Length: 438
Image (cartoon, rainbow, N blue to C red):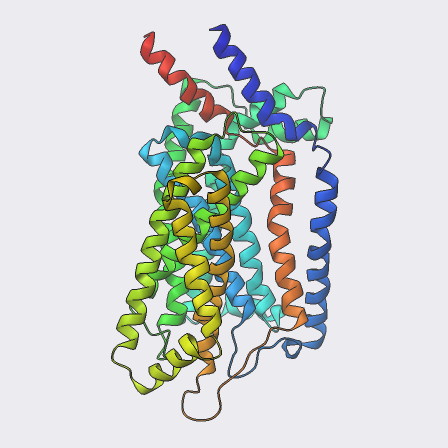
């Protein structure tokens, strides 16, 4: 019993440490990450003033880096949400130390990704017309509805397991944080006291959201894919796009969760609770999804390319051997084969190898989304020269700001809320003792 109490105190101290002190690197990291975010805001202001002509977008290539970012960041979110939901429903005990990190990653990447919808609009002031007079036959309307629903579900899914930990944080940090922060913690904990009726309601609510968020997330990325697939444009009009986008989101999302887990594990010294088992298990999930995504890539190329319709042949020439050939084969090798091998081989199946694999997946899956979006627009529908698209400094600056915003918001989030799921981890640790000593 004394050992269990000591472990519980150690867990709580470690989970609440970021609330009390950010560490030597906290303010330098916040300052460094804030610079590209501020640059992105300035670039967006410049774009609002001068219009979309300051981007590389033109009539022929009307979707570029911004839509690539939208799909990529929402894909990152999808992986974080489903990792937590599926592992929670299957009762995987090893998930407890990483659930808070994956759920926070899901919410923050979704928020950042959704912001690119506004960035891509040439006249965001006309957004009200989209809401007030929606064209229900357009997949873009259903896309916006699906993303909004997913955003609400992700917020609830993050908040419910956080309630008991907020009560712990308010109690354990009494006198060590300001009265305003403590009042906010107590307010958000909703009077949690750990009573059996509260436990039952929390368990029911968390399980219900874990069940609901899976089809909601699948719907979001399916509808995202239909914005492309429900056209007659070569390279987009594909029946495989729905599951192809879903697997891509899972693949890149799990890689993002691994990078976040590894970073905060190192930054706050969480190795005692986030051990090699969690990293290896996430790596095996990444491996499975990587092989599956490579299969879908081959399947799409085979079924689209084998008949060699004239327009498809032109697109494949550009994509595989033409101006986008280097990028495509870089994705296949750097974003597919190398990460799969790094996780599959026993001597690289460790934190370092899995971290490198995840970094490659995150970078090259962005490139793959770019290749899905831009080359099909470059091939003329009737006749004429090939379209070209080169992102300008405005698009690059805004993209860099979006990338920096994710770690910045995560660092700030865990400065305010417990980084580990205290309640769940204590429950997991008490189960073996309960079984041995009924």
